[in-house]
Image 1 (cartoon, rainbow, N blue to C red):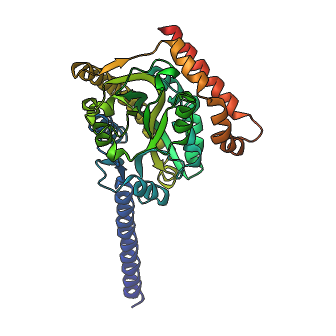
Image 2 (cartoon, rainbow, N blue to C red):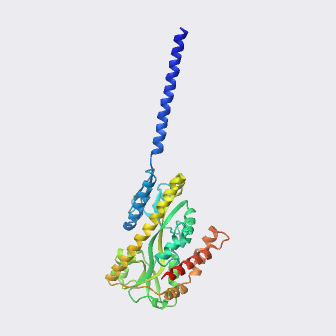
Image 3 (spheres, rainbow, N blue to C red):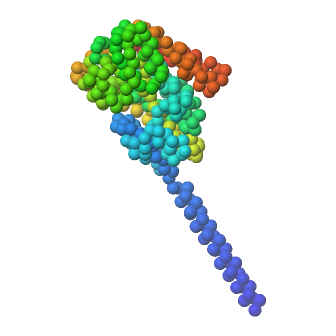
Length: 363
């Protein structure tokens, strides 16, 4: 009887051990399956950017390939995930993982430097100033976005702003005489242009961008600041006669990641994303340079008179724009708070001047 009971007990122990073993395998299987499940990110582009789409798609494909499918990034172009400000909010809250954003000062206080006049005047200077990780403006913009809990990967160039009008080519401050120029709420650019035309009878008109074409057509205004890409994409060449490519300011945006999404990645995955971003940064810049060449060709064919000032003419415009005072008023307060005791405004300005001189030597 004891032998029988012992055999029964042994069978029970064996059955229990088998159940534990099987359960362990099942649990491990669930853990492995969970670990193998890919991380999925959404990459929001609030506008239509068909040229950049190629670089963004290549970036997403490279990340998926290099992570072995562990991280999948889906690009949502044309504002499919919302407007710019909605996208910014989504990134801040972690509802959207990646996006292309513009650091408007009302959203990113340190972003004021992104639109300051004369920081960058051409693509070569843009590459030096915004290049990750060592470009001076890349460092500053990373600091600015970090304050709002966002990680910067790299910057995207929208091209340089020049001055277009229907009266005369602008080569010197005196050419702004009696012009009615459209401006926006970008205070650094407004103040600089106002200083350039000071005492010349120039007037500044605040007109919504959506009304720009009709305002030029009806001669409500004589001119505006704009870029070669906008001249073509919005057919502004139809209502403008002259364009001075003075490099007045630069249109830049950033490709960013939600801080929560970034820190949730392993160091290995962050490294892979950073390397893919570096390749995308190079691809995007080359694509944009190609588009600039095409746009300039189109403008010439359409009869727009394009003028590129000499270095001396550009320096004369910079000198009368009062840019140092504008930096002190608009940029330095944030700089002193973000970089206490470092005199960062002078450091950044010196680095940008160095970039300008280096590029001038190459030409």
